[in-house]
Image (cartoon, rainbow, N blue to C red; front, side, top):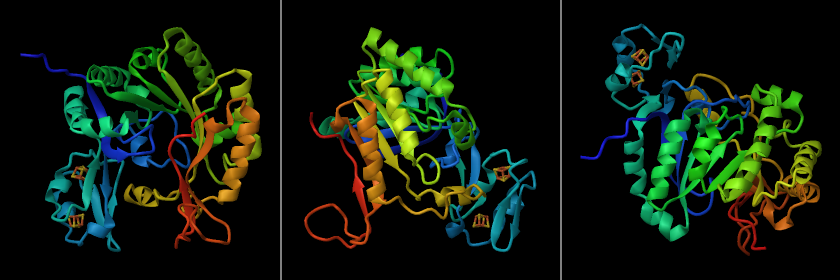
Length: 348
Ligand code: SF4
Ligand code: SF4
């Protein structure tokens, strides 16, 4: 009988049919725990490595069975709201079992490599038809390097394209375990000014930028991963400045990094509810999508500064169009006030 693999991970979720984390249709494995704490984080439930209880107000009918069930007196019901004392909640899940409407949920679970492999292989036909594959994301997946290395190795044994999505704040030696089984590296460079970087993410940026130089040398020697995409989140009143984009572009040019793609990822405001479910507020809750014009302008700044083929530089995500309130998609005017650009850069 084959020996069962016992490496476990703290898994947040497995998301299917993703088109934003690499080429084709992908299944993205989100792990819990992050080395940064970005103020705009779109997956706040992934930051803590521990399981967390969340409450979905729209599902709650106020029966208070959960309050009575908790052995730690963690929950209270005030003004039609379930209040969770997160200092004492052990995420044991007893209240979740008791809730009749599914309004409580534990985010995060321990899962083995075997279990994730089994789950992901169900999607192999989609990968083959779309030239897609799997992406490991987070949180910061390299915090669980042994799990990620083993999982990616198993994916390669099954002929599946692999991508690693990292914030670059990587524990020492983690990349040497993981990169041999990685086809595509998605690497975030968020902010060129280290003081601002610390303000936005909780850490200065030197280690992240230096890690990319080390990895880039490693890639030249080992030929793996075959592709590098640099990604920069464009966040209003934070990273959305010409200075930042030109500065990152200069770093790319001066170090001759030659990524296959530099992607400016447009801010979106879809994660408000995730913060509310965790009992907190998102500081970007009042911000709207960025103007398409601004994203086009920053993309031009990026193209001029980075010394790589123009066709490899693009913005992705959603944006507001100006005045016309017409989507760029198709020839007919569309009744929406945003446009969406995703997908691969044009062929060179
Ligand atoms: S998860 Fe456990 S400790 Fe936390 S509120 Fe529910 S029953 Fe109480
Ligand atoms: S048991 Fe569920 S439905 Fe009832 S109060 Fe608690 S969260 Fe709401």
